[in-house]
Image (cartoon, rainbow, N blue to C red; front, side, top):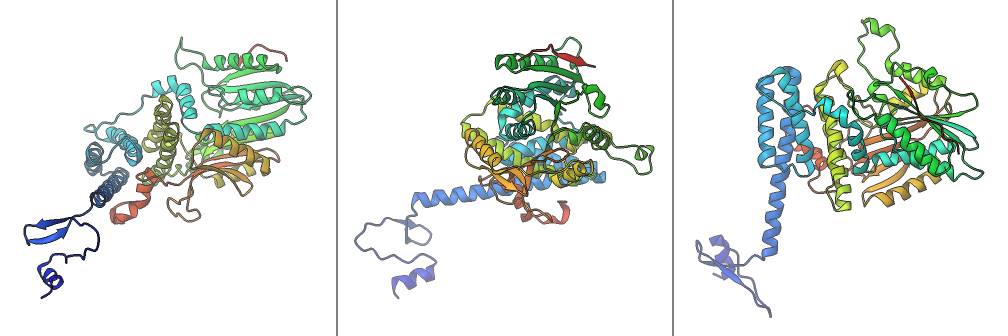
Length: 502
């Protein structure tokens, strides 16, 4: 019997022929057959592959547990929800790293579920962000989220360009910012106006912001006015600032802004309008009155602004059912966290800006998961719904030109590494993060993160950021593979003093 036949019958490998090259062999003691030594690189690659597969399966199992926990909470099965959450927390502490990828984003969702369960089951607890602490540090966390990625920079840049275009040829201009925060958007606009041929126009900015968080605490709205006034003075732009202190936009009326005839007006909203959406019982008295979003859009339209820029998350978090909200949010924030991690890797640092940006997003996650009824503020909705609302309010769309795409692309090149790009999409400008689809849900096979719409009586522009993952182990990669699990129990030049209106 030849050696090859002998080897095949014994279960060992046949001896390879060796021609002109040295070969190494090892002896299998159980069969006394001589085996070729496996090159170390091949063995290591196989071990790495198996390790990655195990990690991915553990991550998918983690997502399965969290979605099932949300389903149990919705159904009122709190004991089962507590058990699933405990198992998910064990996975986060042992088999799934919380440093990056899916572990990082799911740790926030697990904490949010714990907080929600603590209200129904005293035996469970969750580390929820303190509301008073958030109010006190809201401005700083917003600034850190601004630094953590290109999202707000891109929104500010594109909105400012739309405002500059609308102000072309005007000698007196007025910007109404529905949530001025720290005013980081406006120095660039002031600088651009200072360079306008023929000299800058007289600029007035009205900023809406909350009152001081506590008696004796910093008056951040006044500080913003002082900083902008000093900056405008330095670049010789005639400027005045007026602060309007309000916690919400709903009680505000147009007369409060002291509009001046002949003054060109721009209205700017960054991630604010979704907080005006509410649940309305058709059988209640509230159904007979205008909703907050309708009231605000009506007084904005009544002022006839030359442009109305709106920046909103392109997400679907306004569903009444917790499971649907939870699942959509898990996809959405997995995308945001992946892109933030890529930005941090591009900078080769993990700065406090990234951590602060994460804390900013954590507050939104807790609101979406824990809030119900009037207690839920983060009611993000897809772009097509906002487009319809603004159109019904009398605001129409005008697409951006090719120069806007070139400018925005130049901005991204200066800010980000590979993965981000600018696209023109249906007359709107889109900020994209790769192009791999996360899931197919009817009309779209991609996940959009943000939309910027610039509407006026006849003007508009949009920015969308959509996420797709190319990084191994990214949050969206894992979530996209959730189908590996059986779905039976998983639901899917003159300076004026600053003013203040109270």
